[in-house]
Amino acid sequence: MADRPLAIALGDPAGIGPEIILASYGRLRDAACRPFFVAGGEDVLRAAAARLGLDCPLVAIGDPSEAASRFSEGLPVLAGMDADYTPGQPSEAGAALALHSLAEAVRCSLENKATGVVTAPVSKAQLAAVGFEYPGQTEFLAAVCGLAPEDAVMMLAGPSLRAVPLTVHVALADVPHLVTSELITHKARIVAAALQRDFGIAAPRLAVAGLNPHAGEGGQFGDEESRAIAPAIAALQAEGLRVTGPVPGDALFTPLLRSTYDAALCMYHDQALIPVKALDFDQGVNVTLGLPIIRTSPDHGTAFDIAGQGKAEAGAMMAAIRMASDCAAARSHG
Ligand SMILES: NC(=O)c1ccc[n+]([C@@H]2O[C@H](COP(=O)([O-])OP(=O)(O)OC[C@H]3O[C@@H](n4cnc5c(N)ncnc54)[C@H](O)[C@@H]3O)[C@@H](O)[C@H]2O)c1
Ligand SMILES: N[C@H](C(=O)O)[C@H](O)COP(=O)(O)O
Image (tube, rainbow, N blue to C red; front, side, top):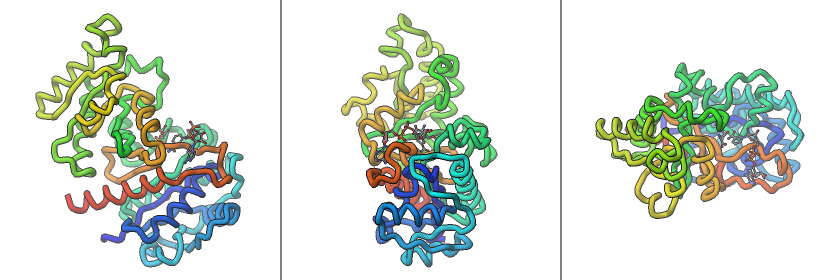
C-alpha cells in the first residue's frame, strides 16, 4: 500500500497550524512525498486560506482511502469536525477540535488507514483546559499505543543534529532524581533501534551528555555522572552499542563533536531542544521514537503571537511531513 496517506492533525486552530498545513500542501503537492490528508477543520482551513490569500483548493473526504486519488485535486480534509477560525485567540472549542483531530489522526494510523501521523502544534495549556490529562502529545501517544510513558521517546532532529531529552515535560528541579541508569539504558536502546529501523543507520552512535557543569568535574559538581550516567554508558557498551560519554553539555554540540555521533542523549528538555532550535528552527522535526506508528511534528509551537498574519514559516512542517514519509518508506523496506 505505497500510497497509504499520512494523517495530519490540525493542531490548535488559533495557532499557525492551519496556515503551515496549507503552505505545505502548496509546496509538497507535486513533490516526491507521500499524499496526506487533514483530520478535520475544513471550515478553519478555508477561512485561513481566504484570510491569507492562499489559493489552496480543499477536497472533503469521508474516508482516508480517498486521499491518495484526490490529492492532486486539492488538500484532502476528513469531513465532520470543525470550529471557528479566530487566529491568535485560543478557545476551548478550538482546543477541543485540536484534540479530536489528534485522536482521529492517531486512530487512522493505528487502524492502518494512514501510514503515520504528523501533528501541527497544540497548546498544552489549552488542551489541559479541556481535560487532556497528559503533559504532551508524546505521553498521549504512548498511552493510546498501550505503552508506558518512558517507551515513547522524543527526538528533535534537524540537518545539523539529532537530540533526545531523557526527561521531558517535568520541572527542572525534578530532573536530578529522574536521571537513573535504568531510564538512560531504556531510552538509549529505543533510540538505537529507531535509528536503525526508521532512519536506516545500521550501527548508530550515541553520545550521552552529563548533567552538571564539566560532567561533574570528577564529583566536585554533583554525582549524577558517577551514580547513574557512567554506569549506564558502561552497560550499553557491554551490550555492543556504540555509546560515548558522559560528555560535558557545553562541548556536546560543537561542530567537531556533532560529527562523531548520530544522536545526542541529553538529560533534560532544554539541553536537547535549545541546540536543535538554535541551529535548525525552520527545519527541525519532533519525532516520537519507539511507537508502533510513525509520528512527527514541527519543532515549534502554536505561535499565537503571529497566527493569521502570514509571517509563519512552513519549513519545519514540511520537514515533518517529509520525515514521516521517509520513515514510512524505511519501515516498508525493512
Ligand atoms: N509541536 C507542538 O505541538 C509544540 C511544540 C512546542 C511548543 N508547543 C506549544 O506552543 C505554545 C507556545 O509555545 P512557545 O511560545 O514556547 O513556542 P513557539 O514555538 O510557539 O513560539 C516561539 C517563538 O517562535 C516564533 N515561531 C514559532 N514558530 C514559528 C514559525 N513556524 N515561523 C515563524 N516564527 C515562528 C513565535 O512567533 C515565537 O516568537 C505552548 O503552549 C506550547 O505548549 C507545541
Ligand atoms: N517539547 C516539545 C517542544 O518544545 O518542541 C513540544 O512541547 C512538543 O511536545 P509533544 O510532541 O509531546 O506535544
